[in-house]
Amino acid sequence: MYARTVRLLKHWNRQNGQSLCSWNIKALALYCVTSKEALVTSMRSWFSYAIEELKKGETEDSACVADKLIKLNALRPEVIKKLEGALSKLDKAIMYDLAGYPVLAQEELSDLFNDPEMMPTPSRVAVLGYAWQRWLARADARAVMYSEALRAVEDYAEAPFIVQRRSGMDARAVVATQIS
Image 1 (cartoon, rainbow, N blue to C red):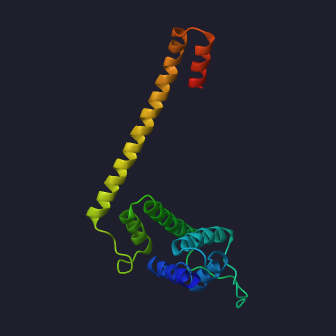
Image 2 (cartoon, rainbow, N blue to C red):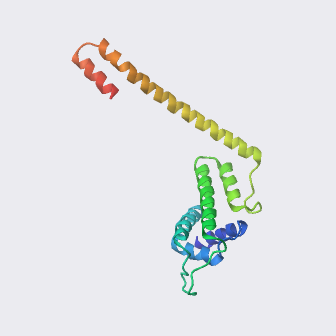
Image 3 (cartoon, rainbow, N blue to C red):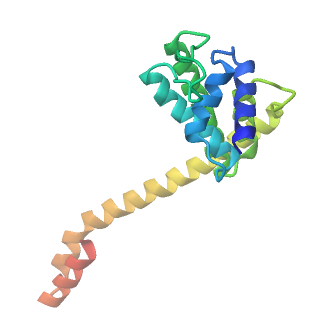
């Protein structure tokens, strides 16, 4: 999985300004990519790890070939910002896929890799259809949540009247347990 992840990350790097040198990608991957992870999980691990490590400073040469730290091809804050943007796109793609919106996930991955030959952008009609479907599902979920909240408020507001209409201690105890 290491080699496939590194190949994809190098491709992403080439298509997005090549702000990291290839050795930097490999060195960072040595510490965070395992063979047991799925490819998308390995990429996500790499982006997260790379962001944290580059915030600390430049990457050390893990093979100890060079005495110096591995240099970046752009300013470190710019590289970190680019990595954070890529991680955000990857996270959105994963979220869309898990939620059952594969076309929206493909659109995010297409935007991430910035290479229509490798990852073509889905048709605009398909993307809009899935986005509309997602919006409707969220609106339905919100409507259910709001109606349940209003029902709870109404039940709570009616509780004192129920207690006054009932007689006997047992009825009051039952009502009190129902509202708490």
